Image (cartoon, rainbow, N blue to C red):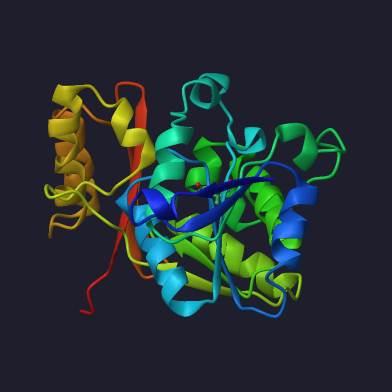
Length: 268
Ligand code: PAF
């Protein structure tokens, strides 16, 4: 088990970084009886992830984070290959944010069945993101269930930016009677309003400037058709702009980078 103890080199927390299931179980056994908060991630961490960690450390005795770029939720090989991986920086950030256990598993250890067993949802997972990314949500639910079974958290933290993901995780927890409290956390944004996302770093400088138009238009008072027209006129590809689940949700792309976002609908 790798233990990063940098207490003597600054204000770093004593974090256990574990890379297999046996080590994870040993790290959790040492903390038996304590409340556990869990944040599953795919790494390339930003202030949005760190705010989930802060909330978990405030609400639990132990905070566990996982970093795993889950192959089954990528419907495009290129998106999986180019997904940004910045492990050293991530470890450093998590230590600074008082995370207790970091789990960085190998793919083979999480899929000993060679992908034969997968969870599926039949309605919400097929629309919006599910329509444009077939199989994405079944892969996401499968890995989240596996991680929940390994970490056995009392609470798990998910950002509202991935609103459909949040709904599906809550539905799974209810349907499978999992004793886990799913806590929704508000979306963190850059100063220009763009929702923080690990994929933003793949935007070219001119695309990054233009990207701020997406949240600006999505929360404007324009009609859905006018928002879509304006986005298209500015060079975005638009997958959908809809109102559902009490929110206005949208998905667009700029170049090779896909962006999603949503805002609560204001009471009329
Ligand atoms: O939101 C994500 O980063 C991923 O979908 C998750 C929840 C870590 C599962 O791989």
